[in-house]
Image (tube, rainbow, N blue to C red; front, side, top):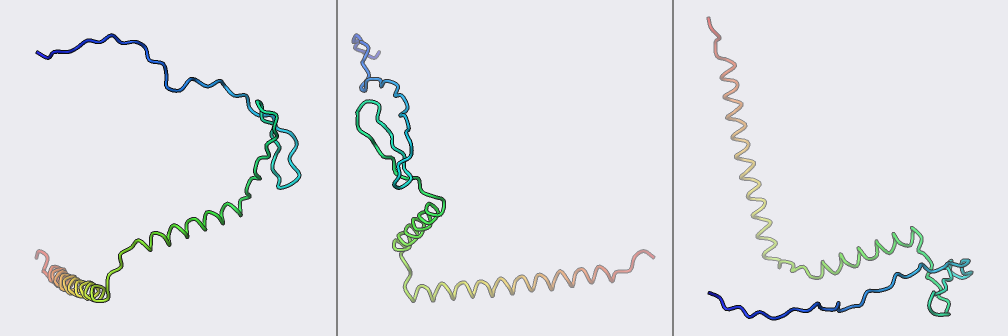
Length: 125
């Protein structure tokens, strides 16, 4: 039998108190510089200028730049083989291709001979 110690439990208060629902900020007329909009913060009296939204050409160009940077970073992580390993592996590929071509050529010739032999057989008679 397992000896379990029973301790009274009491409800725990949440670690983070619940937040009050924020009201959406009121937008005023767009700011003259940069196409951003001026937003008045609801609790403080200060004015916040939102950054301008990027256009489609800018966002695509930034995406291409990010992709190029990530590709270059990944290629720097690659452990490239040395000259001797590259030569040996290239010779293995050429050799295996030659052997496979010979096997397939012989198989094709044998099947062609078998089909021609079957066609020449006399039918009933």
